[in-house]
Amino acid sequence: MDIVENVSKVVDHVLADKEKVGGIKRVIWIAAGGSNGGFFPAQYFMERESLNIPSSSFTSNEFVLATPKYVNKNTLAVVCSMRGTKETILAAQKAKNLGASTIGLYVDESGLTQTCDYNLKYQSVALDESSMESTNSGFGLLIAMTLVNKLEGYNNFNQTCKAFELVDPIYRKAVKYTTPLAQEWAHLNKEEDTIYVLGSGPAWGAAYVFAICNIEEMLQKNAPYINSCEFFHGPFEVLDKNTSIFQLVSVGRTRAADERSVKFLKKHGGKKVYILDAKEIGIMDFNDSISEYMNHLIFSPILNNVYMRALSQVTSKDYMTRRYMWKENY
Image (cartoon, rainbow, N blue to C red; front, side):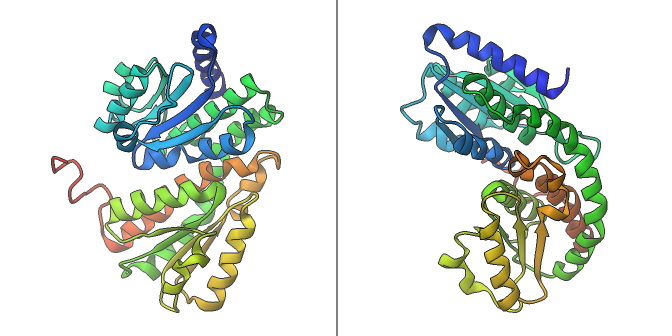
């Protein structure tokens, strides 16, 4: 069963379960860390395409501590954790206790899969053998697209199904294209303590994950992440000829914001300004009607598996080691 069929089946079950109580009227996305960032494409899609289904995204612990009053029997909660993060399991249980239907996304079975009504197993973005349409981000985005299509009608859903068949081949080509570029970038930044990451719109989630997970968690370097639209409202004051900047340029409606940022960076920045344009890594191979929503599915694995690994190699920093994670009781 392919991902489109699998997701459609689960969404059908959720809608059938809730038919007698008024149906699904809201969706929430809950996760922590990289899983949280991985839900951004789904949230971005819902906010721009759904007319009648409000959508919200929460980091797990904040959802537990400050639960919105609107979560109820007409809510669908999609909850993600690779191996069963404690606060994510608690968040899933909280949503379920309030009457929400719950779909768990997972790699390893855990308390999350025991808690959720339905579960979908995804493939880790960090593994070369994974098929990149079947990552947590892929499942989240497809759940959003399927839900909107079934409840409201989404004119581009057929293009969506075709697009998911293209994700992995486009990613493989992008790996070959970016590998030498990433090696040059890594050598230039091997001594840097701070690398700023910029992006906006459909690439914002990829910028977030690259900063907090790939650079900070895995390599223990500072990585402030800045929305390209907000760059001109304070952060650009740190820019000089020695500042290390990694700018993502998306395909979609906010591309103009990224291009505005690039223009300023080229004028006032130096040789450590690096630009990764979605047009150069295959986003234009998707149909124009849905290419905007596919940015993250190509950007994020490239950043993790090519750029992070290249920087790890030149700094001799094992990206599987941690200072506190898996060691401290927190």
